[in-house]
Image (tube, rainbow over all chains, first blue to last red; front, side):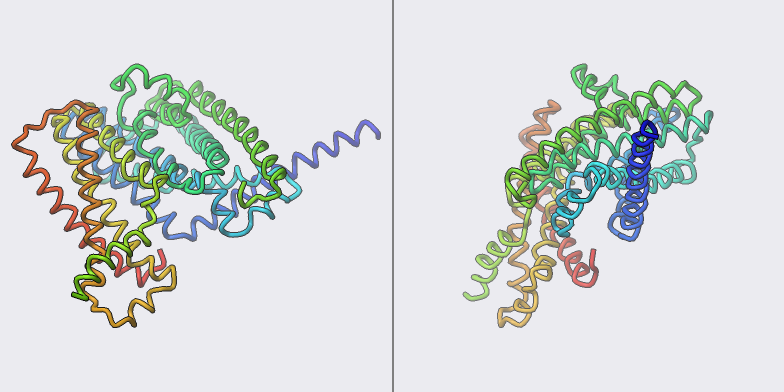
Length: 270
Length: 166
C-alpha cells in the first residue's frame, strides 16, 4: 500500500498534466478559430506567397520543382501562424489580465503555455490544406502521397515541433514589450533558411548548420520524403527531438523569468 | 493658413502619435530588416527557378515594400483614433476635413519612400547588383508614385477599418 501510493500519485499527476495539455489545446484552438484575423488571414497570407512561388516555378524550372515548392509552401503557413503569434503569447495574457491567474494555477506554467503555441501552429493546418488544394487544382501539380501513414506522422511532427519552437519564442521574448515585431521578423528568414521553397544547397555553406537547428527544416523534409516515397522516419524523429530540446530550453528560460518575477514581486514587469 | 497648418503640423503630430511602428524596437525589425529578408527570399527563389536576374527581384521587392508602411500607417493614423476614443473629437472639430486627413498621408508617403529606398540600397549591396546611375531618377520617381498610390489605398482601408473590428 505504502509502495503503491507514490505510483498512484504519479499517475494522477501525469493524467492532470495530460488533461491540462489537451484541454488547453482544444480551448485555444476554438478561440483562434473564432477569430477572422487568425483564420482567414492565416490562410490567405501564405497563399499569396505560395501563388507567387508556383507562378515563378511554373515559368522557370517547372516539373519536380513545383512538387518541391508545393510541400514547402504548405508548411510555410504552419510557421507563419506560429511565428507571428507566439512571440506575443505571454504579452497577450498580460493585456487580458490573466497572466497572474495562469502562473498561480496549480500546474506548471509551461503546461499552460505549450498548448497555446501548439494550437497556433495547428491553425497553420488550414493554410497547409488550402495550399495543397491550390497547387493540385489551380496549378495542376500532380502531388504524390506514397506513404500516407508516414505523411500523417510527418505533419504531426512538424506541427508539434514548430509549436515547441513557438513556446521557446514565447518565453524568450517575454521581457520584450514589442515581441510581436520580433515574431514577424522571423517569418521570412525561416521560410528561407528552412528550405521551404529554396533547396538548402543553393544557400551559402554557413547557413546550413543554422538550418539543421531549426525544426521546420526537418518537418518539411519529413513531409516531402513521406509524400515522395522516401524514408521519412529519421526526419520525423529529428523534428520531434528538436521540439523536445526547445521545450527543455523553454522551461529553463521560463523558470528564470518566473523566479525573477517572484523576486521583483511583479509579473507585469517581469 | 489654418488649412496649411492642419495639413503639415497636424499631419506630422498625428503620424507621430498614432503610427506605433515609429519606435526603434518595432521600426527596425519591421521596416528595415524584414524587407531585406523578403528580397533575399525572392532572389533565391528566382535563382532556384532559374528565372530573371537578381536585379529584377531586388528592385521589384524593394519598390513593393513601399506598400507595407503606407497601407499599415494610414490604417493606424485613422483607425487608431477610434481605438483611442478620439475619433469623435476629431469629427466634431471645426477643422476642414481635407487637410485634416490628407495631412496625415504626407509623412506616410515620405516614410514609405524611405523604406523602399533603404531596402533597395541595402538589398542591392548584399546581393551585389549593378544599377546604372541613369536609372536612379526614374527608380526614385517610380518608388515615390508607388508610395503615394499605396497611401491612397491605405486611406481606403482605414475607412473600411472604421466599419470592421479587425
